[in-house]
Image (cartoon, rainbow, N blue to C red; front, side, top):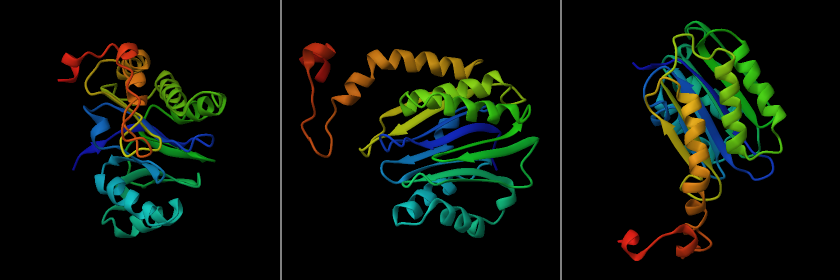
Length: 236
């Protein structure tokens, strides 16, 4: 059983309806099994003795109309060892809930507010999630991705995972079935700051391309080959 000792923030943007998760831990590739997000449905972060089906099934339950609280209650009933789990859920109304089982390791806990939940286990102390929450409140004028990145940075600066650092991830969805932002640092000595660096590069080298992709409303997309420096050879 893989144990992800992690700090994360799960949130919905009130202005845009976007959902996202930012997360870091001292194991490789946290982005592969902790954040679960779906456009116009919700966001879930699953951690501690991680059960990926909390995210997989949780999104299915949200999609059929269950609230975040109803999904939390259902997951606790169907999981054979809920006391080992920690997870956060935000639904499409902005309701946020979190659960920290009594057998999570080290310092563990969570904070929940309107549209967001912050959670962590095996941490240096409560300051990690308190600083993440405070950062999220202070950055309301920024995009959801930027708010999540800054909250993750605040958590790391406050101590983060007491065992050290290894991986970090940021995933945000907007209106499409594909993500608006999906960035990962899978193995690094300073993953949160490296993720922030990658995010800055993506702002000029990736995000304009994502914005031009085909959408449900516009299957042709908005490709402007000159502005994105895309040639016929690149397309092939």
